[in-house]
Length: 71
Image (spheres, rainbow, N blue to C red):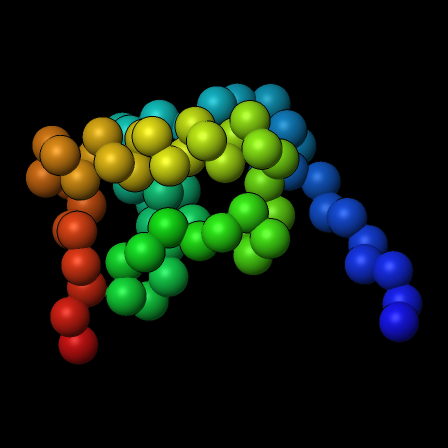
């Protein structure tokens, strides 16, 4: 079985941290049903995966993102 090539973290490349204000970036790390993508699928480092989960939850609480996507 071939070794998987590690991609660089999206936020490490940009040199920024995720915020709840940037809905377009947050949606990128959600599945079609609105669940947070796991680290293996999102390609984020563990630090930024924890941060993106926290910011998505914050945006959901403020009503910027839905808890579920139906349809």
